[in-house]
Structures are given as structure tokens and as C-alpha cells.
Amino acid sequence: MKDLLHPVSLVVATLGFLCLLRDVPTRRRDAASTALAAVFLLSGLSFLFSITTMWNYLDRVLGTVNISVPLAQGCVVALLACQQVVLTYWGSPPEAARRRSRWCLGAGFAVIAGLLVLFALLTPSAPHPIDFTLYYAHDDWYATYLTLYVTAYTIGELFLARSCLRLARRSARRSVRVGLRIVALGATVTLGYSVVRIGDVIASALGTSLTGWEAFAWACGDIGAMLTLIGWLVPTIADQAQSIQYRIKQYSSYRGLHSLWQAFYSEAPEIELPIHRVDPDQRRRFRRISIRLYRRVIEIRDGRFVIRPYLDAAVRDASEAHHQARGLQGQELLAAVTADQILAGIAARAEDTRPAPEQLTEFADSERHTSGRPMDDIDALLDIARHLTHRPVPTPYIERVFA
Image (tube, rainbow, N blue to C red):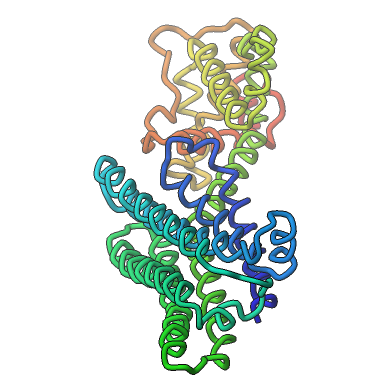
């Protein structure tokens, strides 16, 4: 059972670690993200060390029989401590979180040290990757070792389930609430492993064995661990899905603004920012879509500034009447009128025809109210760009704008 479930759990842990590893460099100061990545790494190592092939390999390479036992279980204790660090930083102020995290990690290291000392007192004569607990259950030192491990494991899982449920009730984010409840469910399932291992200690003292419960113990341990890992991944996957969606919107917006940018650039090429002057080491940064989109928005705004002295109130009035007759209203009307103003303004600048001072006006979309978020401003420009998409390059004669 162990060699059947552990590889599956190892794959889940590895995929989760790789998923989290992507964000670790950008969140170096985020202790919770680092601790969560450590949870997946330690979980994967604990499964890897317990697989029979790796168990025998480590025995041969390190020269210590059954060394995988303290290695794997040490990883489990460490990941339990790291899980508490994650929850502490998610649910407490930074200063309190740092103080509690030091306590959690200190307790974890103390348990690991105790396990190593007790394991050193064992006298294993042959490797037992299968049924190791049943084979050594009669050994008093191993009974002490197992009692320490199971006690730490059970306390860690109980604290994990309780903390997750409490934090889930307080969280405003749906993905965090769902993920924490799955973690709590996984922690509860793993208690089946604890019950069997406690039973092993008691059964040994009574001169009997729980051999028939081994498959149940490993099933609870692995299924519970997989649920826990999946639960931790839910908020991360939700965040990355939003990030991907946002990145796709950035690419789409960049392409969508091309017609508007091109209209300004064809008349005023000086709006293009001189990237060739940027330090070569910084040019790679300027190729990011976020920077390219930001540049495009700035260049469009510069283009609007260039043609602003050529905005004629007569064009705006005629455009408003034209589009209101078509049934446009609200923000769509403002975008359509602004598009007409841009076309007429570009044409007027090409002919160097300025309106009389009393006829000078503002862009219609200056009356549009946005939330101030960058993508809302971009959406306003995209509305204008859509009204330019199917129009020819304007001629200077105002009436031709509406031909």
C-alpha cells in the first residue's frame, strides 16, 4: 500500500512545489510563501524517502540501516511546523507572527533532535522498508521513538485542523476559505494514521499486533496528506489563474490600442518613447507586456495632448448629435464622440488649422468617471479605439468624418 500511494503523493507534492516556486523569488520577504513552499518540498521528501527503492538506496549510500525512518519522519515534523508558520502569518500581525513562528520552529527542531537521538539507540540489523513499525514494535526504544513521533504528529494535525477552520471563518477570500477547509479535512483524515500508530504501541505492550490495520494507516496518511496539499494549493492556483487572466487582458489591451496609437503616431511620431536610449541591461525589462502596455497608454496620452489645441467645439456638437441619433448614450457616447474628435483633431493638425479660441473644447471623455485603477483607464481608451477600428484615415474636412 505504501509503495502504491507514496508515488502519487510525491507527484502532487512536486507539482505543488513547482507551482509555488514560481512566486518565491518575487516574494522573498513573504515568510508565509516561503514556509508554504517548504511544506511542499518537505512533504515530497518524506514520501520520496519512504519509497522502497529510495529506502534501500539511502541505506547503501549512507551506510545506516533504515536511515529513511528518521529522515522521512523528520521531514513530516518540520512540515507540520512550517504549516503553523503559514497560518500564523496569515492570521496574526507581523510581529506576533514572527514570535509565534520562532516557537513553532523551535518545537519542531526539538522533536526532530529527540527522534534522531532515539533512533541512534535502536539496533536495526536489516532494512525493513515494509512493516518497519511492526518489526520493531517490541523494542522499548522504538516504542519511545514512535510515541514521541505520533504525539507530535497528532498534536500538529489537531492544531492544523483547528487553526484552518478558525481562519477560514475570518477570511474574506473565497479561495482561501475553500482551501483551508480542505486542509482541515485532510488533517482530520490523517488522524486515522495516528490512531493506528498509537494502537501499535499499545498492542506491543499487550503482546499482540495490528498487522491488519497497516493498509488503513497508510491510506489515511497518504490521502489526508494529499488533501492537505491540494487545500494549500487552492488559493495559490486561484491567484495564479487571476494573474494569467490579467496577463491575457494586458496582451489583448495592447493589441486593441494599436489602432488608436497608430492614429496618433502617423501624425505625431515624436510621441514614441525612445527605448533605444535605455541602458542595454534594462531593455529586457522594457519588453515585458506590463511595461509595453504602460508605454502605449503614455504615448496615447501624449498624442491626445498634441492634438488638444485643435479640438473644435463644432466637431464635438456635430458628433454628439450624430451618435445620439444612432442611439448611443453614456460612456459609449463619450467614447464615440472622443474618437471623432481625435480624427478631426489629427486632420486639423495636419492642415495646421486651429479653431478660434472661443471654439476650443475638451475631449468628451474628460467627463467620464473611472475608479482610478490602471485597467479602468485602459478600458476607456479601448472603447475609443473600437470606434476607430473601421474608419479610414480622416480628411481635414469636418463633414467627412461622418460620411
